[in-house]
Image (cartoon, rainbow, N blue to C red; front, side, top):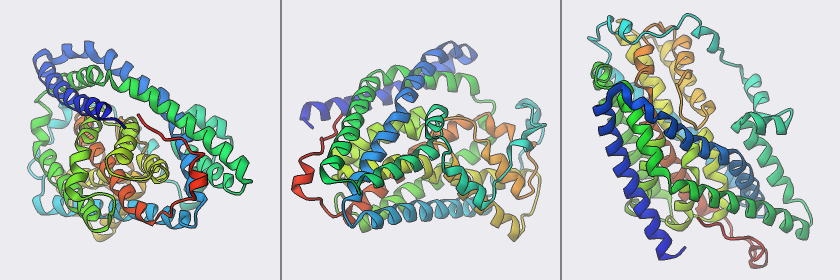
Length: 423
């Protein structure tokens, strides 16, 4: 990538920061009237979602096909899943520990419920937690085209992995044709997304103004302690666990270079609250600035954007204990275990798009915690969503820099058939 393109991306990051701050100020000044900017923000998100499904499908097929040509494919796959699973479990444990030590839910007046009232009468109906085999079966699409139409990212990932790895068993000439086809399609959609990114400051401004104007200070002050504590937990997860793992195990980048390159990706993830929307920028940063191979990037990042939710897992645990503390409940060991298991599995199943985290309801129900207080968290869910998304995408990139060391380079002849993906 040229210096001009690097400069362009850096300037885009600065513009996004400015738009985020200006949007927040505008929202506070306009109050509820800031909702008039919501359609522009929604249009921006719709443009991104338009590209997401084909980008995930094509990049994963190409990535799996590229990795599948070497004996390192299985190792990289196992390590990727292991990294995501371990870091998610650690994030849950940190969230629980912080909540128990600092007790953010103590002293909250229950009258706050009436001020943030929404209907929760039938929320339990959305809390069905599938069993193991039901979960596994749900990953496999009975109709891949229906999964594409519905935007079922987990099923799309499974379908793409099967296609990608199956391509490795084809004759070399046919395999190269398939690989080129999907890699060129990936490059095409990254170009489309790059064009959309240049209007990101406008979209981010509208989204931030709407969020700030809608929520204001009234609800935020009631749970400010929880928000600050959550920020501390996420900082430990990001700069301690994730950054530490990069420093210890990555060969393609350093701790300092990693966060120097990731700042604009984190800002974009924070402003859009969507791991999927941030995926193209994250992939471009990984390959051009962090030194991760295209093959590993195309495999680990789309996968991580869907199943790697460190920030979500910590939030589920902290939200559950926060509400339990509001009711003066003393949680038992079995309730803690239920919170840990449900938070971890729920985070894996949470799609990488912004929206109310109704999976918190499943965590509460699994631990026997009343859900009546949940509306006050839904009222500021966008704030939590922006924070946790910035952590999630950092974990995706950290994983890619680590597992890439185990990739065995493919033959030069085969590499000549692969297009270079750039933004």
